[in-house]
Image 1 (cartoon, one colour):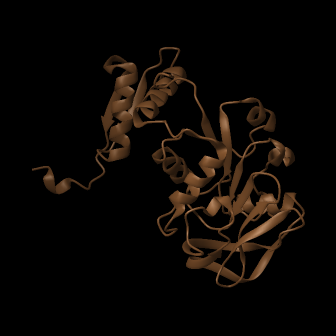
Image 2 (tube, rainbow, N blue to C red):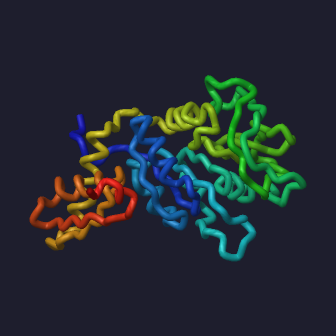
Image 3 (cartoon, rainbow, N blue to C red):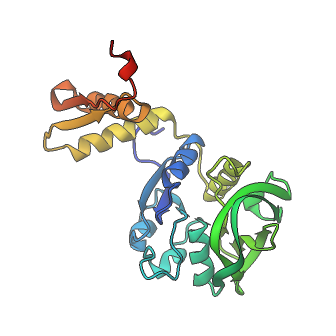
Amino acid sequence: MDSPGSVREYVVILDAGSQYGKVIDRKICELNVESRVVPLSTPTEVLRGDHAIKGIIISGGPSSIYDDDAPKFNADLFEVGKPLLGICYGMQLLARTFGGTVGRAAVREDGQDEIWMDLSSPLFKGLGSGEKVLLTHGDSITDSGPQLKVVARSSANIVAAVQHQQLPLFGVQFYPEVELTEHGMQIFKNFLNLCGCHFNFTMEDREMVALRIIRKRTAQGQKVLCLASGGVDSTVCAVMLLKALGSERVVCVHIDHGFNASQRD
């Protein structure tokens, strides 16, 4: 059995600029699967050649796929041969790549909606045919093309999810990672099952991975300055740095943010 922190299976999250990118990462780890966030432009030969990668998730993003400054991706991304889930922007990339049409819909969808789901899709195993999800998008799939099947629609009859007819490629127009999508974790779990994940990545493993990354990035013996506010994020960061490098290589400085002014006396 692999020891904690050793090389093992993981899922790659290709970041298309989503504000929820780290939320996806956290949700996957809550399901005891390791995930790593990397740029959308990551070369496909890297994704194809790393046999520890069990699946790929493309995050959403604020851009339209037609914007001149839209995040760049490799055209053969969907030929890597691994299960893939495209979220929002990622679904639109999937549709356009396989001959579908993405355009500005007559109705913009912003907020929670109850959508219809085709329960024959393995992505929706264990869910109901009507599920509440969070939709926030202007562009929509107007034609799924010959290779993709529509497996969910919103209350406005706009395409909310697709899957490839033969390949393990899926796309959702909603955000499974947020709380307003009531059974988003089940959707992620279904996808990870399709990836063949073993769900054995623990919090202890995650800690060991973080310690290994810290030591690798400071391998030349550098000292690290840590600015701590006293909140959870910066405090955890400080503890991890001290654990990885020792007090002689970490300088922690408390930042007085003013919120505790009443406690100074």
